[in-house]
Image (cartoon, rainbow, N blue to C red; front, top):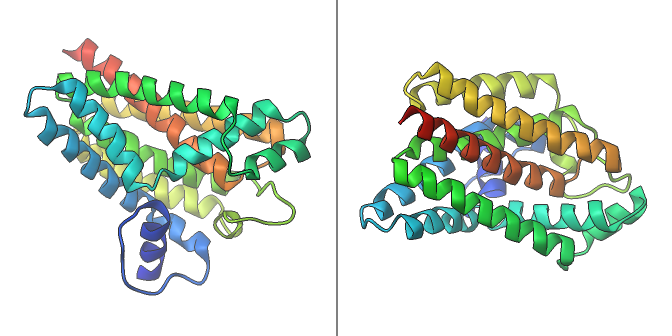
Length: 250
């Protein structure tokens, strides 16, 4: 059972962990919320301790960079590949070919720049308000959205690919179990604030629907890049919604 946690940690983080990986990679999806909570608490801690200097702009930047480093920049890379493919290719085959190219094109660079800027703005607001729990919540929900996309859409590449092992075998049970785990983690994290919980979950679902719907229309399924991009979009949406909620509550 713990082999799934080993696979999830090695897939989603730079944390070196000993042990054997699970035989079916889709089993590791059950552990994505656990790893998401761990990552969320780590980047929120970066924000909290760096904010003690009183330099909130730097603190927000460190949270942003910390998230990239801890995840090996994998999801940011997925966002860039998705943007290049979805807006640079006219056919499904062309889109998938462009997404597989490791080089970053104009659309990818624009998407990454916009994402980093918007994330920094949202994080700056959250750090300034001391709403560090929402930083962790965004990271947690982003990993739950990866499970949701992998479990509800087929793998798009006929020839297979890196993420196929995760998507194959994923289904409704993964969604239900990870959704319950995510809620179990979110309730104490957000101090049992029902309105805060509804706000962040709704924002995450919008991110999932936007990414999943666009991916279905463009390539008829998901790839590893789509899962990574979905994670980036979800973090942004949750952090913006949380910043607005926190500002209104304050």
